Image (cartoon, rainbow, N blue to C red; front, side, top):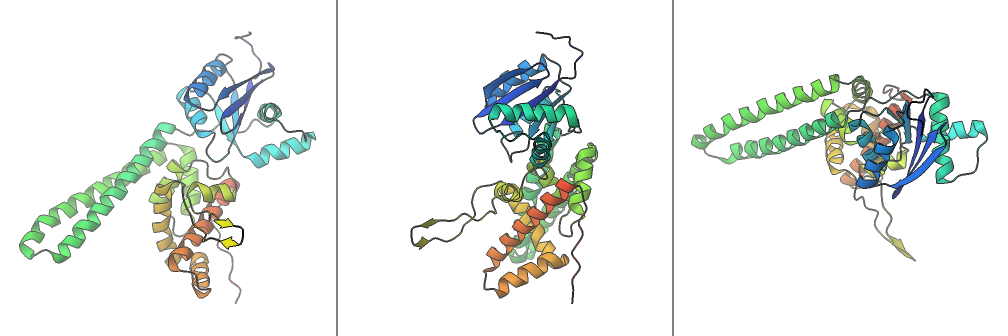
Length: 318
């Protein structure tokens, strides 16, 4: 085992639901581990011995995140690759055969040849941002409850509510300032934040929630993006029975934030306003129409981050 090699070491990782297939190039070392805490710990320990220049793993929608977080905590250089780019690279090589081992080898080869930019994602910052967004939502809910009480309480009791509302307001401002500072601490977050907020309806809180709770956005396909926030309709059919389409699962915090963002977008963004009105005219219930708009929003945002482009509303032809 050559621990002091001067070779350019690239590691390709193919993430599956239960297993990680890992190939170290050009040392021709291949091994697998379980995709769980114990297996990931073992993989990171083994990879670290070879002092890799780059570890590349494809974005799958969520399967890669525990491994990525472990790499970040171990100060290992990593990149989350867009599967489309890896697939194109395979096409250029003429590689058609597909096994987990071959996929890991291909990703390592892609890493060596293309040398994709290293990620600067900070799991601790992402967690802190997520916690701040959650706490802000809690304060907003308590603020709303106190405002409702203010409307029904007698005047002598209203004086006890107003100081509480002021406290909530000040705390919310402080949390928003902390979120802004966390985004400013990382160039990658700054770039994502700028792209996300270029869409009318997406404010700083919605952007922060997407950055912290949906780091895969921009690396996955439209169906995966919709499924991750739980707005992909699920069929419930059996034989001749046609069940009602429902949404379930996903990451509820992101869905809640995007629901509120859509309330704003339907007023300020002509694309979503037109989509909402068209669905209502077609007889869709209001909530169904809103969820459909959220699904459209997340698909567009995913494409924007993938391509690194700002929002540009399509021109309306009269």
